[in-house]
Length: 632
Image (cartoon, rainbow, N blue to C red; front, side, top):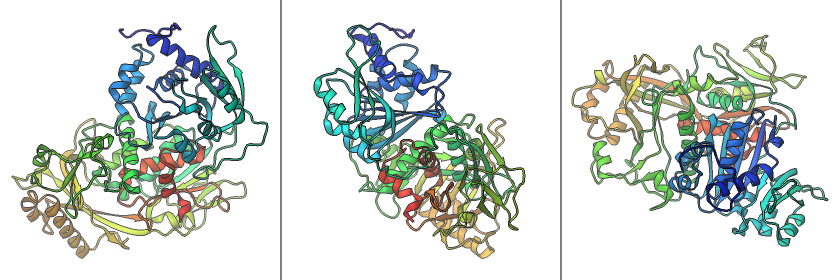
């Protein structure tokens, strides 16, 4: 059927029948779009994802509604996620749904068991897929639902008593549930779980649509969310937020909160954004792999997915000029690279390289390596500027915040070194988020166990490199990393995507100088950093190193150096969450990105926003807990 308006017929077969039933279930059964009108967010739980038709119908209704909520969340459970081709074959061939199905199919890759966050409409429509046993994942994640759709009668799992009880724990009083079919067993199980059941009012003739409302005669036992959150009281819109720090962490938090309606003021001591550790000319993002699929491996995949979604959505961030998803080859220079899978969706993320990929990277065909198809490089300053340019964000440079103070009115204000208001014109803020890297503890006034990590990298222009250099075709990581070919404009700057004035360059690094925070780097330390990066290159790219190594001699113009100070927590994972919810309400933190800011900062921004708003978590609960500030 060619693209056209979606059919409204209710015949039992074909696109029209499936589409009509999905509309009846999601919209009529769920009371949408009237129920979500004017809300800041709406949370739909689809216990049977199937071929995604319920999600597509909800998304299409959201797009068409002028009174739609600011953010639409859909949590969907599936034991076996459909592939891209399967989704497209199942989607009705009509103008309302088919373009949305195309966008969904583009993101349906690498869906390993667990939790996956897919983002659409610039992050205002969010699909969180639970891949695995629905009951177990619902108990683990404890999302709050405003509307629930059960699976069809042919799928008995959503009707199991244990699953219905897990669903009930995700409901607030007043949550509406809809299901096809109304056998006595389902009605009894729903009633026992706290739902008031009735036939759907005004349902079409012959329609077996069931509606229920969560309204137990007992006082529901408050669920135990995997992490405490600070959801705004019902009806209270987001207010003003101060973010201290304009690097990747701060820009990510600002963008995530602004999308949810916050007025965000970003303060930074420097004259331009990304003046600290986020000012490197170009950096690599790629997933971490381990034979046991460790916490870091799973976190990195969630982070890479969020990074790729953000980069693709941030117009006019220019692909090929300010970022590119080229793939990354990992060279196991210390130990062989071992994957946790030999088949399945994990290969969408990482797999053994082909001989052609090794050849393009100028490595031996027996080199221990892995190919990360979902990876690439980005200019962090360009990314930071695009994030800070989103509606609702005001950036202030040359604003050195010495510390934050909560006044008697319950609002946070920024103070300078003398203890005076940094800027008397700045309004107080209900929320303050510290993203100041190494300065985070001082700004927050709370002891944080942060270790300083000074890093030096080497960079240069291709035009200044010796002739005959064997540049790899893609970024390479392992012991350090190399971005071999990217348009650069120097550290702390981004290439001009319109005029194309940036030159092609390369970036290599970085050193890890623990407990070092002195800048600028002394001549002796700079020479040591040059030598360390030269040695990294020799192991990472043995074919390139002999040609480029002479240019690393101090004083030669072909190789430039750049240094910055990062910080890390004792377990080398970021800190995200409230600093002291009781004593310091409204003071949160997102910091300690270490060397993985490009991979994790955007994910951390979304996690912080989810916790603030009582949203479904964007990753598995155990992984969110591993990032929580409360752990320290």
